[in-house]
Amino acid sequence: MKKQRKIIIASVLLSGATFFISCSPKFWNRPNTSYQPLPEITSLKKKDKINEAYQFLEKETQYDAFIALRNDSVLASWGDVSLPIMTHSARKSIMSVLYGIAIDKGLIQLNQTLGTLNIDDKKAPLTALEKTCTVRDLLMSRSGIYIEAAGETKEMKAARPKRGMHKPGEFFYYNNWGFNVLGTIFEQQTRLSIGEAIEEWLAKPLGMKKFRANYVIYKQPDYSEHRQYIIFMTAEDLARIGVLMLNNGYWKGKSIVSASWVAESTQPYSEDKGNEPFDHYAYLWLNDTDEGTFWASGWGGQFMIVDRQHKLVVVSRNDTGRSLLQQGLFMWKGKQASRQHHQDLHHLMITACQ
Image 1 (spheres, rainbow, N blue to C red):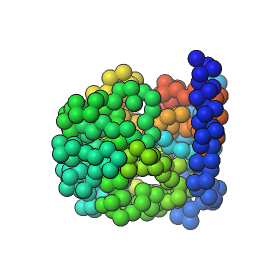
Image 2: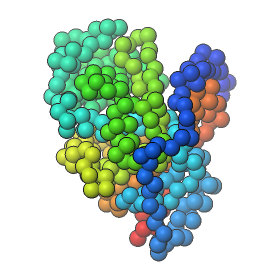
Image 3: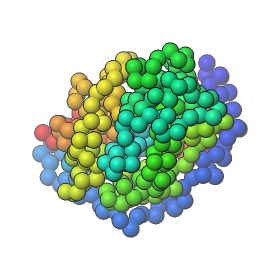
């Protein structure tokens, strides 16, 4: 098994080692002119719990960056929280926020169908039934369209239903084709690239430190016309999006995305069995209804918990690299990234605030 894994990783390195290198954003260390430093919490009754969390992070986990915010203030911050790291599937939760803003602006409607939006896939043309899929179906990952897509994992491919097995809206399947199409629709309807939208609608208003439009790159497969969008973002900048959601779409008293969207987009709609600690899926967010939290989650250790009850946002990140070569080396090392470790850190942050 180990030999087979090494062969697979070696083939990845040889076949596409320069893909992300050639597309990587420039000026990684250059801060934005709109950067607004986050205040730090200096008075805590249980500083020992923060120290305990740090010791746990050092001894038990392999995270490269960790940051916890209470409201909009830094509770704890370790590692390189200013390093742009690939978000992997956490990109989808960022897209959910962008959709909320686009819907608020009247640029997209939840009930629009692929047919009315003139969305198809030339590589695998959609049926009339598949074209009845709505934007809301896509956000819920209930498209009913089962086509090979860029960014699919081996597990996603294995779980993909047969084409035509389910109607749009009736069955939940974590579907990268639908996620990628949401990117196509967004850019078509807003006439902005995803990177431009994040920069103008989120990075500048939230005072992000690093994010720029060219921190979004694309992978174009030869089996679908819909590109995978790949978002790089620092742990600190991602945490600001969490705070926005924590505060019902407001940042420093200004509404960035409507409170109604924040509520609607984080509701548990679809049961998600066997994906602990998550048990339901919202609009591109993952729900842990037992703890009353919602998560952004991505491969390699890209985790963010938004905890409204305790007014906390907790972010852990692993740097999986900025090239296929670096990503292959990350896989080769077998670096572990545990949801449970992130949840343990979240619990320590709760205790520190009590």
